[in-house]
Length: 624
Image (cartoon, rainbow, N blue to C red; front, side, top):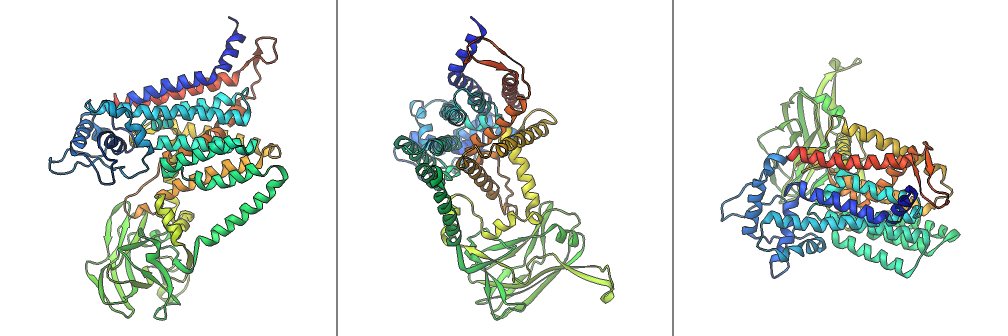
């Protein structure tokens, strides 16, 4: 058989070959990764198991003690504590076994699908049942590969190399395959949003049709019933539909309407009658922490009104430098609507224990009273914050909050001494409009318990730069591959540095070609892909905003994977264009439609296979 004939055959059967490769790679991950070694896998499996074994659909708080003991025993058998450094143990028979993070109460669709094979093997080994549930995720992975192939064909045509490069890259990225073969509702969320991307691409490029509308609505429904990380599809489906209705020059009306809508939504998202104090944040609802005008204010016009357990302020790097290892005095005017007692504020730090300002209680009256305490701050310079406490019985008011130390003056002054306050906005005069209660409710539904003040902090590099850097590092590593509850890296001393350089270079090349061909690329496609990536990226970084006040949390890339088709398209196209500088290739037959093998195709294939092998060996070497 001639080589040209073989290549033509491979071109025609490429999706079957890709699906077969995805099946082989996926099955390898299913069985190479030991039981329970994926994010939150015990809790996700429990939900599916309860659906398969209970007569009624499980409700939040439901559990089966015997099943939990079996899972806990299996986790111990497979050395879960040793591998993940996450402690778990079997408790006495009369106490509920804790499977880390329960998932019962999440959207049920994925768990119903994962429960289907479990109905047939109810009395088999619990680890065997887990493997069967992983097969359901594997099927969703293969569907995602097929969808990515359809997206590539829609954008580039069936003959373009990107038609196999895009799905091939998805199969090759170790972190993605690892998640898509785990018992985890992320698998359905990613597949559902990928379907939304395909449906949207069809509508934006080819216009409205009934079946494309059905596909879009079906994908949005799947996104809603899969996981909140895919809910971005719900609001974005509206502009997609409008752009599919209005074609050509008529789209300018959609752009105008979209701009007006965004302004209106922005205005309606704000509670213009209330403000929050900038640089202060609370883990409770943001209505519990307000900036209000008060004639009793000892300093300025506004005071901080707090209702709840506690609130915080992150100290700036400059502020920390001023007080580290120094004698520090805390002071604040505090009062309440009725007499009550609260705890003295404390200073939290990432590198040491909490610094207690005073063991005494603060007795509050209805009149502003100055309360002070002095301590010696520990040396060192790490992330630090001030935690201030409230009362469950009455609102507490704060003003002129200070954390002051002395330092030598650089110029002439009283005794050559200056005073530095480590607290920003100490007099509460700087405020920001409060988000509306409806926005609060929506953010809570999407697990983004973040206030307007925390959003401001997220964009303030002086305050949250350390968090952004740490999260970016975690995000990048987990995107390419960091396994086993974040305990298993890819092999190689400079593995991630090499991948970072390749990612940046490929992205810059793609950006260059987008700008070069900006007139010929539909603006709606550029807008769509840019918006879903940027919004999903913001959602990822916002998940951990403010978490440093209690349990520090750096979100991994699994929350970003719903838009992975867009990102991999961006990276892989840059690699393809980078390799296109090599013009070597041989026309294997005279037919103009025959396949031509270029060196970039060979290099990309080798790179993908190397990534596949790299990920599998990294996991195998760690566990075995």
